[in-house]
Amino acid sequence: MGVLFIFEHSITHMMQDLGRKYVRYINHTYKRSGTLWEGRFKASLVDSDAYLLTCMRYIELNPVRANMVKHPSEYRWSSYACNATGQTDKLIHPHPLYTALDKNTEQRQFAYRELFRLHLEPDEVHTIRDALNQQLVLGRDDFKDKIEAMTQRQTRPKPMGRHRIEDEQLIYYIL
Image (tube, rainbow, N blue to C red):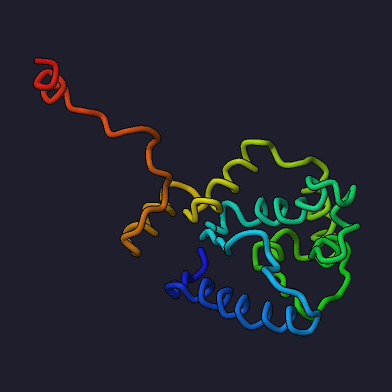
């Protein structure tokens, strides 16, 4: 497992700063007003050993799910072309789990393309979206336990519904 770095609020603050400065620049330059993005920035810590490639598929299949393109290779802003075909982009640096797909570059690209032969299962999409929307950890239980111990923060969704009244309290209220 790789090294875990935790910088409290660093990505959040960076996105807020970007939102303030870039949006102001765009609005001034193009004589417009308002926001550029639909919602607030959200992030989820990902157990890369278990979920990185699944998250890469999720992200690169988003334009397909949104009916913007038929295949991720058609989306201009996707990293799919780099990972699946070897197109170079100085902004993209391969993750070690991607490079571990195969030592041979062509075989690695083939293995990556094979990941996209089938779409993600609905429960995989749901799990990723829940973790992101609630800003919780996406990973195995042992990974979540480790993160909870390190950060003293919630890593799993809270149980749905009201707190259950203990049987003794229930009897008291009935009497």
